[in-house]
Image (cartoon, rainbow, N blue to C red; front, top):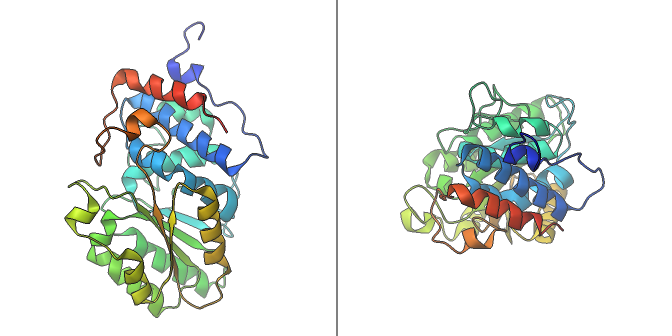
Length: 290
C-alpha cells in the first residue's frame, strides 16, 4: 500500500479477463463481496461466500445478457428474492461488468447504487426489490407469463432461500408456475439451513424439500451448491428439459465457504466479522486463487 490508498483501493480487483474458469469467477465474486464487507465492516457475508459458486455458474455459464445494456429485452431475468443477499449479487454484477469496480467502495453508503438491501430502482441488473421474503417467486411467475405472451424466449431465474419455503406465498407461486406450464421459469433455492430464528430445518422444516417440489409438478434437482461441475450440470439439465413445466434446483451451500476460520465458527443467520478479520479473510483468500 502506498500514499493515501485505503485498504479497499490497495486491493483493487483490476481488469476483468475475458477467458477465465468458473472457479476463477467464483473466487472473484467472493473477493468482491469481502471488499464490500470491509468497507462497511458488516454485511451478509456468510451467504455471499456460500452462494458465490451458484452466481458464477448463473452469470458466466447460464444467463444471456448484455453487460452494457442491462435492460435489453432479450436478456434472461435473474431475480434476487432474498434482498439481504444484495452484497452477493453486487459482487457478481461487478464481475460481469454490469457494475464498475470503482463503486465497490460506495457499498451501503448514502447515494450509492449498492444499498445494503437490494433495490431495483437503484441498481442496474437488479430486477426486483427483494425486501419482505416470500414475494420473489410470485413476481417471477408473473414475469415468466409476460415473456411467454410476448413470445420472448428468455428464461426467468429466481434465487430464493430455504427460509422462504416457510412462506405461504411461495407455495402459491409454486402451484401457479405449474398451472401455467412455465417452462421458462427456473427456481434456485439456496439451502444453507439458516434463517433469522436459527436453523431453517428447526423453524419450519421444508424436508423432504425435493419431494415437495416434485409433488407440486416441478422438475426438481438437488445438488451441492459449492460443487461447480454439479451446478453446471443441473443448470444445463433444467434449460434442456422439453417438458412444459417449471424447474427447481435445490443448492445446498455452506455458509462462509472458502474462509476456514469463518466456516469453523458457530454459524448464524448474520455472521459477525470483527474489524481486523476482514483483512485476514482477504489475505487468506488472495492466496487461494484458482
